[in-house]
Length: 464
Ligand SMILES: Cc1cc2nc3c(=O)[nH]c(=O)nc-3n(C[C@H](O)[C@H](O)[C@H](O)COP(=O)(O)OP(=O)(O)OC[C@H]3O[C@@H](n4cnc5c(N)ncnc54)[C@H](O)[C@@H]3O)c2cc1C
Image (cartoon, rainbow, N blue to C red; front, side, top):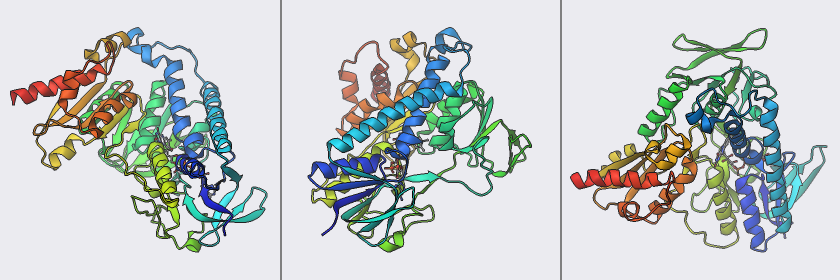
């Protein structure tokens, strides 16, 4: 009846995982991608480029060794944009190659072009040369992701005023950078550039930032940023952004303060990339940010044979969760009952220092009126921390005093995004404080912080 069992629009994490899952179930799948190469925002402008830039910056700047050799220490004295780009492009090439191989191994067809609905089961694909073809499918997955929000009052010029897609194509490193938006992307880039000794100002209209993270962690993180001279301008809206004749941006805030920098990164949100999809033809609506509502358990849209997954459905907008959504959508479409996802998934923020968290924050636990106790470990209390020359970094664990169960783990510091998985396993397996106290951890490791924080909480609980 149809050309394909499933057409997937977009080759990012959710599209990729759905396509492979569908193919593994013996179904015919076509992935349509309008970008030059497969991989999506994740591979080309989001996750992988930003994490590769971060890794290169930390390596070339000698950041991880500065605790021992001092703030002036550098592995490469003069770091240029080309140094950062070289490693990034190599990494991206490798990512694309792996993905292309995965598609061909699993007989997933790919077609380059922009997809739009011309009927509930019919997708028109327009190539770069303007040629169009229509394919039909029993099921469609909308995995089109998002693009940066670009309000009219920001004078984007691709050189001094950039969005987060453009910054991964940097031609020259600025001496100073203003970042508007202290969400995950803004905070990551602000701290990565600060590690390069670029003078950074982080601007956020709200008085607080990263509100979904445990407050104590944010206090520690903020202290670290201030210590490194990252200027925080919180709690005041941007009233105007102007460009000098030389193209240098000046940001004026509602409280009268002015921020001048060589470069401005506007990172205040993203919108669903749904405008070109002609969703009316499929009878699907979007919200004011171009996002599509789905049934969370199945990822079906208001049209049951059309699914949506990834950033286009909103929170949590992570590559990690998008992949899982893609798998769930394909399983449901092809008659498998997908297992519900575990209760807790980790959140990683690849700022410098890293932040990672799983489970409830102290604020959530108190709001739910659960009797709890916290245990804290500082990385400088571990032998591994001494060896690495760490001066900062902390782990906080929260336990129920009634059931002794682990409720949340919150980490800021070196290796946080890797360390978190120990906490995630204990949490999802409904483990208690006893796991941390009774088990032996490799020595010397940063993971020993789990034991230290566990004992800290245990001592308090015992006293109570
Ligand atoms: C700077 C930055 C850093 C990030 N860091 C992390 C991180 O460290 N960890 C993490 O888990 N997540 C991170 N994310 C989020 C992560 O990138 C996204 O959650 C993920 O990419 C979303 O995947 P997706 O499946 O929605 O597709 P996307 O990766 O958004 O890709 C969508 C694809 O669809 C294509 N497309 C759109 N419309 C059409 C159309 N009409 N026809 C054909 N193709 C179309 C686009 O060209 C694109 O290639 C980051 C995001 C950004 C911006």
